[in-house]
Image (tube, rainbow, N blue to C red; front, side):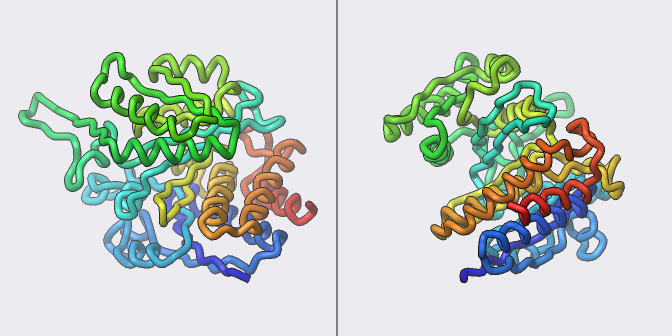
Length: 357
């Protein structure tokens, strides 16, 4: 049997609680699917790495990640790092940039008894992850923000055809495996050259996928459409900042940011990372909702399954998803979903569901 080696980066805040929960659940799922056990490699990252290695992302961590099949990244609390470190690119940004993880795939799916604002939501936001209007991703070196004088601050937004082509292709390929519908989100009425090109290049790529229905909306209109009828959308493709905003909104509409998973990937590497932050106010209290991290880990299994043509990995991913759905639908959930379960209680319920399936 093929054996996979995955990295474990606990991160900060609730990371050391939700990442081990995901490891436990993946172990149960791959066992139930008849796979060889995953080989886990723990690597330093975040505040603990600063204390032990003098940097949030040690070089040894980056070197080790390159040789792994994928990795699980816990949330970071870079705003609380010592001053010399908080001004640097944050840990997840450092890893994304180092490995050119250009696709940030963020599903939003509601659960039965999952506290959704719009029941039946089941969409995926495909976010271009390397350019756009975020200063840490719009230049090869340095950042896209600068101040020519103390009273003037300027930010650059960068959109390039190659970057749009590859994220658009990711979105359309995903749509072909789902309901064959893609929505392009832009602001071409104002940002005519940048997001206008994003829209137009996406539509060019669409010609290679004639089975996929395509429409487009301005970003401001799209926020309204999500609140009103999120359950009518399938795959949404957009630039970096718009994707970040829409995915947080979609996560809450589906029930909670605590259930919002994501994967950051290139053609050769992938990183499972929950869409939410480190929640330092509840860290260490066994209160955090681990669903987002768990489902992000399932997404990593799916990515590996496609890369290696391994149907057992796909089976394991489906078992993880079914286990989470079974736990929530049975009334076992954490406080953000209206339940009373602790992190460890919810994890145990998912493991029980997987083993009983």
